[in-house]
Image (cartoon, rainbow, N blue to C red; front, side, top):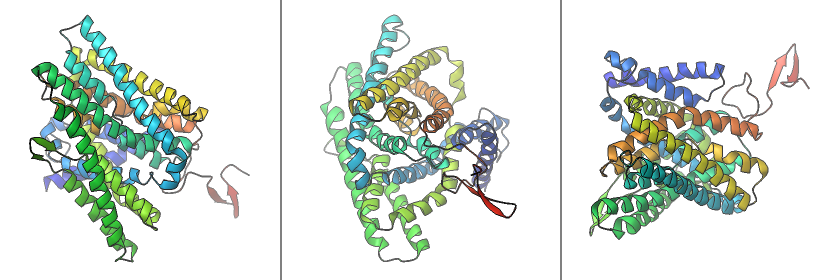
Length: 436
């Protein structure tokens, strides 16, 4: 009973905050995160009133399954962007930009944090600096997708952004596995090639194979159902099953086998959308169904942010260097790779800014990094950066897409409609919103 009350309060709080955010023209995702912070254990939750807010971080973490399901649907939706006809036009650009900007970001953050280590060796170790550099490559697909959907953004920048975000996480997994392996070797004095090379490659390959199988099976079973509601139910069933299977972990011959939930669900969405004739209409219905799940995901993400890190000066110092290094890395890495691939001026100018949001994937990496001697410091730095990036990142993404002309000026429109001129009925005549 208490859980249901908490979830309903969380969702209602997110909805109320979104109304306030609309008045100051902030994205809804920022409102949901803010609502989560307010309902979290360091604000309203600190009152210990059962059912109103979350009284502890453990209480929020116990609802992690909701976040995993939401990430699964977000990844499945992003997979819809990898349609063959679109990849023919932007595939080479997306792959080049996705890889180069991630590598440049990691390299720049490594340099900045290693410089901090040589100036203040007691503040951060070499292994921590290398690990944080790899985590910096990851971008949050959830916040980006929410902004795109809320404002019905569409255009070359939006299309390339969604492709790059998907590729970015795959590259980030490889960079993190290699960097974490090197960091562990520095601390233990033993180099483990299995963890540096074999395990991350296996994780990516197996995730893509599992996602391919899931997408193909969904298409095969969809043929046996003809009503929209049953096809929607089957799609939801498939995504839930895929999320569950992708969370499995086991060891084979001393090699740790695991899957990337994001890659599995992205691949499932990609395969399904490319072989199913009615996938576009079905994806729109899935978006409508998952809207409440996304609200809960971001409210819970906000509630999970540990505000106590703001009282730790050394964490704030490392976090400031990390945020500056990552921001410059994302912007100039994207800028340079866009110039190299001859992207349009608007894409070259604004893509890097839209890649700033960071959340779930980086937190998962930070959780793994806690095995290092300075693991708690790494996690706190990432928590601080997530707090900053998730609150300002969506707003920057919105402004960039608007500056690129891919979001029209907001008006009194229904959020369910396309982002296009709205027809108003006024004094018995139909007049367009711009008065023509």
